[in-house]
Length: 365
Image 1 (cartoon, rainbow, N blue to C red):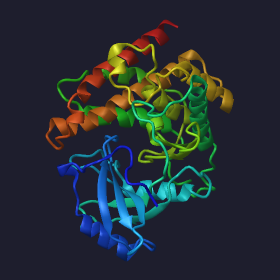
Image 2: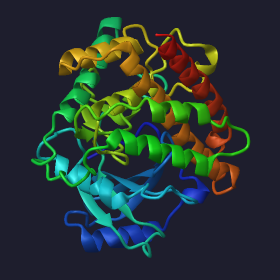
Image 3: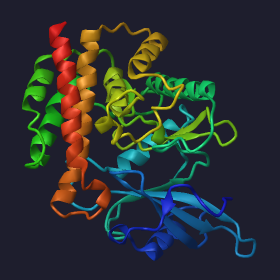
Image 4: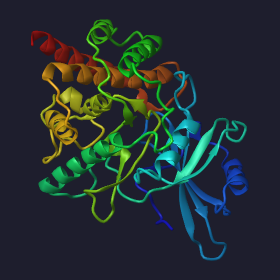
């Protein structure tokens, strides 16, 4: 049962609409326990990659009870090879459920693009609070710090999952993860580059020449952010679910930590970097980026020099720039009209400047 409103769920954008009746029929024929009619469809605007919708389904003909489901499907337009694989995203969460209790319950997966024009999957909505650019709830400084460390503990727990026990041992490609990432993201950037962003060539060359060997291989999320975490409604310092498993794989945990750092905009960052903050990591009580790294290393026993960390931090910034550039590429070529993406090209310059500063500092020793 659900309440009348869900934070962040808005009217569906015209270009992102789909055949609701077709989904309703598919659910009724393929999923046990979803016999009712879809009474409402809303779209979550927070994500910039896969499209996410709230489906409110009636479960009782006379009682008025409803069940909230979440539908995920790919965006329209040109996509990077291997990206937006709904079946993979569904499989990972279904496999994790018995060993990692922070995933939503999977409801069903549709691989037939004739239903709505693409594959999609459906899961139960996890009730709770999702932090966005602003926290959205009142917490003391001590509570904010507790929230911060609890979320980092969630990352540590994820990296402790046995992929074999979860049935996900085949998810990765073995040794050489760091090298594949450097080469792969460099190729993606060159393919999606537009005239108005930096070339990143010097940074890509430095990353290629300074890449470390894999520390170890574990399950990594690859998009671990506060706004992908659902917090307990009764105790919002505690995570109850981790969302958006699109890029999860087996790889080096420090690459995952580098991705975390790239999104972590703190209170003393410059004004331009603050413009691209997507989560409330600037609040009093939040750890700084350096404290995040130190906390994670203390919890995991990893020893990491400043020079070594420079690679992961710079790569995290570059990877984020590529993700945003791939989205901007669709806007630039009029494959989407979403106004949120109009200025994503500016982020490439901001991230490039930060990455170059980190590299220069590392080179100075």
